[in-house]
Length: 314
Length: 325
Image 1: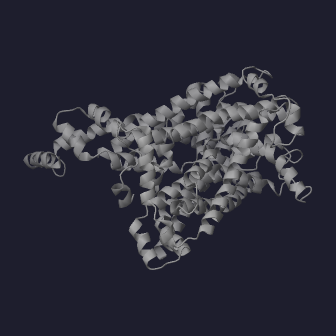
Image 2 (image 1 turned 90 degrees about the horizontal axis):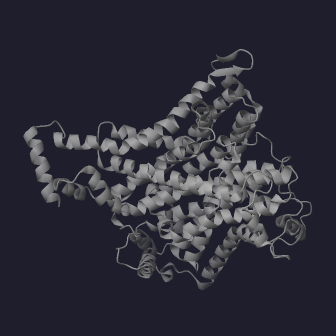
Image 3 (image 1 turned 30 degrees about the horizontal axis):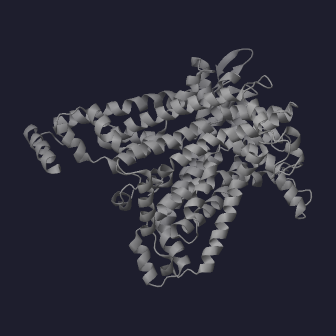
């Protein structure tokens, strides 16, 4: 096929002596823009423009008397000095630092088991593990709120039965671990599927060579397979960091069930939500959203850089 | 993208004449031949039993909340709190609870309407996202117009922007352009999926050969015709994955509809159930508790069904895996 296409194109290019591309290719490529335009229009209108407007809004302050006036960095100063905002940021950072490694370890463990085929009913288990991905976070949080409820929840009863009396999963010290369990329940299967796919694409001969060298199985997994799926792990860390730092749905639903256990600034996104919706401080909320966006970009890109440097050093 | 993704033929693509059973059998055989026999690893039988047991434990953890939801959707409000959570109780109230989903019990909206709204938002938003991503992914993969690279990286950079940071700006913008309490305020932003564009670009690179397109051009086919007749059929597995991901994304979205809708007839399920949970707990409408439970169950059934029907698309993890490689 290429034997017919390329000489013609090359012949035309030679005749017209275009610098790099022939005019034909050039015109054709310009038509490609039309495939991209519909998406770009929607992208500009519903992503870039609102972001721009939020930044603009964050530079103004609206007062009941006096209307809206330019206030420069005042909203940013207020957001940056807000104890509520920062305690939320610190909480989600701690949350991400625990939840992501634990979840990825579990996901990698099961992906390895399914990849090696060292457990029975692998296909069935893979399907089961993926099921929570189909459960909206709202429904997931509602289910767990019932299960962990401090008075009638079955898990509380179970804890009492094994001698842990007075255990309250929604006390201020156990709330974050409870949320971590909920999110691990929701997302492990999805991460497992991605890691499983990556493990499947490790070339078979590499593993066979390791087997011939009589390498023990755990070494094959940790020293041969793990390094080869590092790109997948880096991607998952990156995506999970972005997701974890904007934690919102689970704490808000749990707040409905246990208002005393979760403050309205439990996470930065909750803080933004309450600032905008309940307090109608739109300018401040916009500034906080911009700050949170920047924090997330810095941390997620940072996690990417850190990983890359470490893998290069090896 | 490593060489292995390219050399490995997309396993999900079967010939049109192949029946479902044949395809499954072929996939299973392929999977078996891809797996190195256990004997070679020197794994003992006891180890296999032990690891199967661990898998079963995690499966139990995974299914426990869903089993709880299914069991308790058959209970009356009193039994919901007073009986053992993991077994059934009399009276059997499943059908009564289910019928409540068609009524406006506390004057704050009807479940069945929210279900319809969610389906509408998911189909239009997810379908739109897939269509836009298919066009754009193809455009970025197979044309190099001026600035195409820069534009593509610009779109990819948007992956960094957290959804929650875009939701409030959308709300502020909607207040200016009168899109608050408009279904388009929900549907249109759902159509913007930078991840979808990225995935489709990767998929086109793998599955639509340049030579094929060039040959069609020499035959005088227009670019639009080439896209619809030639490229699109080859892109179907990728399209299904993007469609699945974006439908789930819209179906699960909570923050955006929560903030832009104030009329309960526009709510999607997530906002409606959240509202019920809040009112059941804080406004003394305890009659809503059984409705929250059965509402949750009815919410997840269509999605689980969708996943089981389309499992060959997500199970192969083709696209998800190819971004990672």
